[in-house]
Amino acid sequence: MDEKLIQRLESAVLRLEAISTGGHPATSPANASDAALDPSVVAFGDLIDQYLGRVSRAAEIIGGQVLEVTNRIQEAFSVQKELLIKLKQTQKPNPAGLAEFLKPLNEVIMKAAALTEGRRSDFFNHMKASVDSLSALAWIAYTGKDCGMGMPIAHVEESWQMAEFYSNKVLVEYRNKDPNHVEWVKALKELYVPGLRDYVKSFHPLGPVWSQTGKIFAPSKANASASPSAPPPPSASLFSSGSSQASSSKPKVGMSAVFQEIGTGNVTAGLRKVTDDMKTKNRTERAGIVGGSTVKESHAGSRAVAKVGPPKFELQMGRKWVVENQIEQKSLVIEDCDSKQSVYVYGCKNSVLQIRGKVNNITIDNCKKMGVVFQDVVAACEIVNSNGVEIQCQGSAPTISVDNTSGCQLYLSKDSLETSISTAKSSEINVLVPSAESDGDWVEHSLPQQYIHLFKEGRFETTPASHSGG
Figure 1: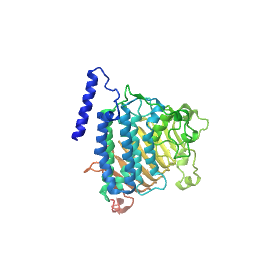
Figure 2: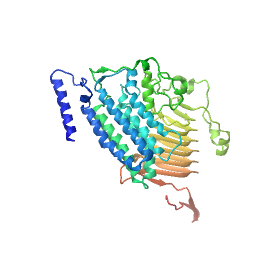
Figure 3: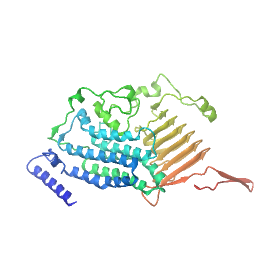
Figure 4: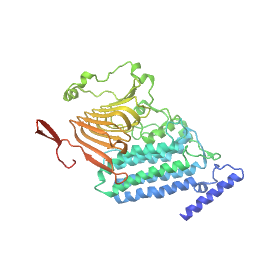
């Protein structure tokens, strides 16, 4: 630590001398070794040593795929440190130049994402938490309020919230089995919050600080003149400047979305906006919502006539978000919502939906292996006719109802512990709440699904049957 302290002091003296002689404090260092002594670069190195070192130590004990994906995290942070050094010697590039500048980081993250493809392993949740968390490193791509992403600090926090959906699963699975996995998850969280978040807050709160007089970073002629042809997903190039209908029909994930839009030269081009033609009142084909009479039909009969329709992701009449028939979509996000709008999720499978903001009501209907993360709801969150769903409330919800559902995991925040939960014709309902004793742990409670009815004093008294989760 003494050597690093001396390096920081020497760097501070050089900056003060530049200011006193009329120079600009943001001028580019003479070489890479001088840039490496910049306080922001040194602090990032300390971040790697302090926080990422703890993650690596836990991963080495676990070994296997957890160690492999942790090595990808280590590689990604090392690449970002190299980019921070170049940042001090480079003027702010144009979008094409920025895509070329960030290409090394993008390649590492794509390599990490490839680990989650193929057959699902026993450590899938570890790997998804790791890969999703790497999207936090995209803070370095922030170019202004019109670039299509949040401010750097908010972006880091939101990226971890996406990864936390999977890290919580690891905590639940291993909290009573293997403390090394619990340590790995806690260390991974602290790497981003508070680690990376506080670093960005201290040195780059308004975005990366580029040099004012450094060299101009321009893309190579080959990349500027033509984009590589995109092979079939998932190996398609993230830097393809052309956007085809085939690729735009499928949402991009995390860092992939960020770098894809940077490569097109217009970072807001790919954002899902609700245009006039998407609104129900302006559409020529008026596919109606299920009527009240249809709802009264038996569950078995409705399944017999049900057909898989086209996927939908739209705001209808400005009041109702409709998310229908989304299959294998892990990055569905509703952002522009308010407390007067409702969200209706129907027929989705193996997908994850995030609702960022307060809405009036949320309904999850006929979904399988669906994950929904929401902040606040005014009225209620309803789960009906579904199987294997996971719901996480990060804010507050007065009521959560589960009807005719098999397999439902409810994650409640500290603000939602007073939520009223009602169940009917449902089984395997588990509620996880934050532990009162330790930070970051979850305590699982199984809701009873068997009851005893006794006729006493002229009426029936009903009590839950005793079982291990009671």
